[in-house]
Length: 159
Image (cartoon, rainbow, N blue to C red; front, side):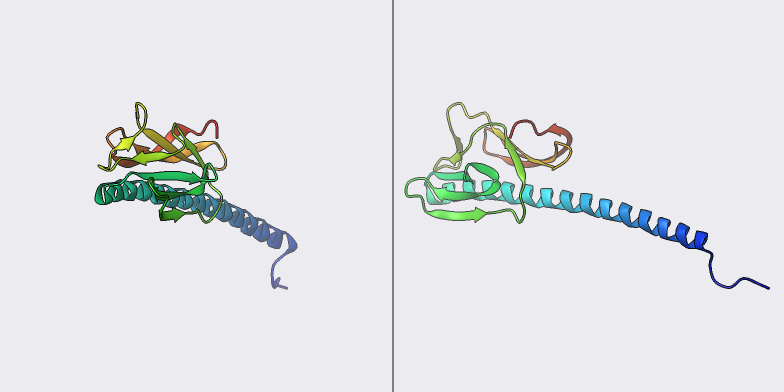
């Protein structure tokens, strides 16, 4: 008599293979989601810095970009320095760790140039949760140029 259906061992192997594939898929999706989130936050920060520079030059007024509650990861706002008028604000959709190499506030002069004692530029690292690496970096050069960089070896120390 010929056997019909599957044996218990065959069923267990099929379930084990399905479980393994599901786990690999969830891990890959999680990593991709984190990378996309980092990229979106980096682009939003770079766009805000570019917009602040443009607004300063257009309005002939100094413009500030500062972190919300002293933490870039909670978001940032762009304001006019002389009266505090809010020009824009961004809050990431989920918690993000951002490490700044220097200044807690970025100021642009009425001509659109970065201000500050010996301003040598600032790098903002958008950090992954685990491990403490940054694939996305927003760099404001001493001349005021804003660039996005994608470097795999940057470490998010401090915080």
